[in-house]
Image (cartoon, rainbow, N blue to C red; front, side, top):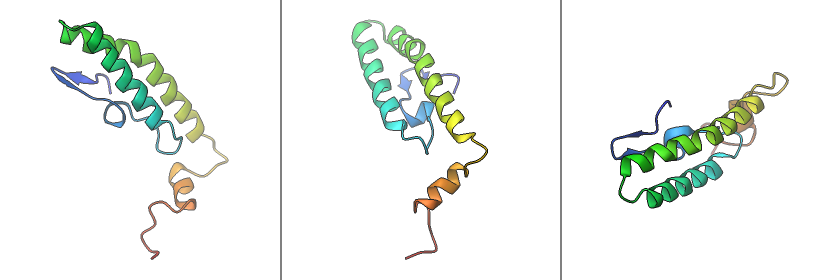
Length: 97
């Protein structure tokens, strides 16, 4: 997403910057995002807009690096797709009981 906020609404974690289902990074990145947002809002107590802007500016490079790592892991041509890896581990199976 190009922006993680609109007015007083701010997205954190998968809602704003989902990393990748298959890499196991989503929770870590979401926790970092929540901490950064809390810190920026505390720092900008009298300036909500400034705090939100600082959150987006300060976290963007970190999120982009993690997204790039996820893309690089998913792009290996000699490995199955993300969906294939998930199915091989039992996720999303609908025909088994």
